[in-house]
Length: 265
Ligand SMILES: NC(=O)c1ccc[n+]([C@@H]2O[C@H](COP(=O)([O-])OP(=O)(O)OC[C@H]3O[C@@H](n4cnc5c(N)ncnc54)[C@H](O)[C@@H]3O)[C@@H](O)[C@H]2O)c1
Image (cartoon, rainbow, N blue to C red; front, side, top):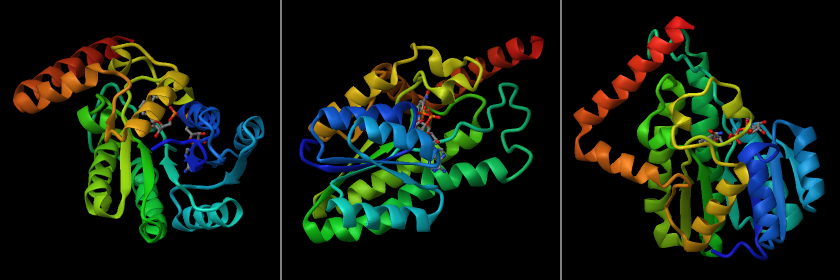
């Protein structure tokens, strides 16, 4: 899909990858970019710089997503591209004392923001897109949704679930002209990454949000399902499926090294 002339919504658009996506879509000639975020001040700043529109929205709440979609369509016309990008780090424990954690709180929050937000966007947009013969969803997930991130069980698990939902969205609605892409980088230099200690997610180098947004734009133009700004991820996926047990062993070695270095710290 070409983004020129299209109405686009980006959640988590106030900062990091979402901000870079908004700017890239604007440069590519989008008719209107809607910047939706909990952080209204930064959403307004991004919107002002790209002649876009800012919305305050908590993506974990169905009512907020429904309102965002209805208001954006009322003001700017049919949404052609909806980017579920908002995400949270949360729950990084390099020592991995217990993968199950100690409470439901980080799990419930990650589930709402990384999974249900994508489900709500589909729930309220798919009927509209079906009626007009198509549309596009770009879901920012993570390489952690394909490969797991050591020390982050809630993040990795909910990102895997997001991959599962995106596959189902693509499979269920290909016949209705609805396209789906998942954006799955490793480390990207944003507030989220800076808020946790450097780890294996930075092993192949941290990319700039602008680079990741360019890759996303290219992926949308080519209508590719999996967009991998770090090309190494494809090789890791192949190695994982080739020999799952060897892969678990390799990841456990990374965990052991991490435990040792953080244990000493
Ligand atoms: N930075 C990385 O290394 C990296 C790597 C892979 C995937 N990702 C994913 O990329 C996406 C964007 O992350 P980022 O790195 O740009 O982080 P970021 O912290 O810079 O930006 C995240 C944005 O999401 C917003 N947000 C958080 N919770 C929200 C909610 N409930 N409702 C609405 N907005 C909310 C925040 O206010 C913020 O503007 C996330 O889904 C993240 O998991 C990041």
